[in-house]
Image (cartoon, rainbow, N blue to C red; front, side):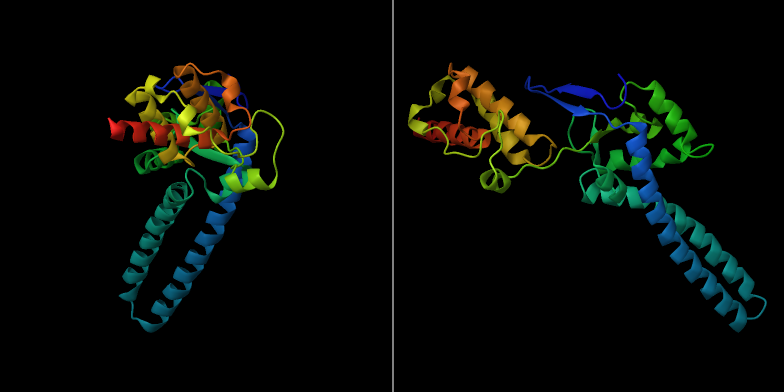
Length: 266
């Protein structure tokens, strides 16, 4: 598969969704922005250490030179930690995005479509040092050309991939500006009394509840919510037309509430 094409993920619940794999061009732009930010920060640190070293050299005797050497060594360590930590910190705070990736509309995710964890972010960014060899991400670019998911070595080692991030759709934005197509504006959910919830299993409800808890973790929540709502309707023997004019999340929530309420009466 070439970069920029769709990568399809089939979840254990038989819900299929896809992402657009990020190509070399968009990833280069993101890396360029991040590199500029890191370079500016490191220059500030370097100038600070240099000025501090000059002060020490001017106020200490010859023995002070060893202290300056230690300061310079410390700077090298801090520079490495800052470069590596920059990506890890932002990917954890911004759910797989650095400032450069956010600007370019990219996001790092796990191969199964879920958000990356701290350990995976640490691995992919430590291996970045190898991807950068011999210069300008030479090794990384070669790996991206070869790999079907356009991954560099860091992504292969961590089990991650970089995809184009889809715009977040909120209930408020849908209410304010209804859109044409398969996703209607929010509407009241189907009344609980007419839902044949007895046909659903506890596993079906668990899938629905897991989705409701993890809303916001996926870039395509709206697509996923429609697929889960359709799955529940099929399990209840209901036509897909029951979803017409109903916001998928509202339907999923109504089904879960109705099933839990009926379960409590049993």
